[in-house]
Image (cartoon, one colour):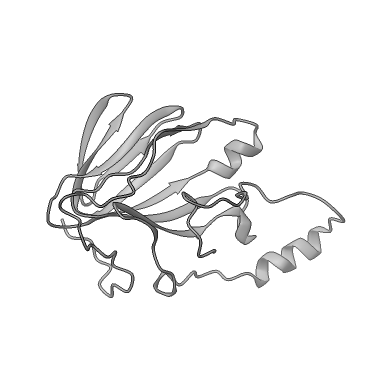
Length: 184
């Protein structure tokens, strides 16, 4: 669980942990059982910005899982993400807010409580359509497993904005929120 943003880092990213060296199932099970089973999201701060922010809870570099990537996205008022595509599917559970996706040129609107599905090889982008309130989504994807299977496609079409949206000037993500019940 690093503190540096994936989207702006100049360092190589770890998409899949190495399978190398001596392997002993008993040792591996002991290692896994010693790993945390609860990740304290409140101890993590959002990265990136200024229109979309991320908290990466679980990814292969952490050593806790080899098949999942789980992160929380927060979109500033009127904010958007980069336009991109990748081979893996992703499920976005919308915790709060209202917005839309554009998948391969088609718009799909969403509200809190909805699930937005990004299909394999889809060029897509996420938008918060509310000019006053942020939106938030929990994202689950099997990206590491897809890469392990040598399904290696990812492309950025339009980068993340480097300036806030006209509605998101001075917006700070909700780093230390205490009420985690989404509003419908």
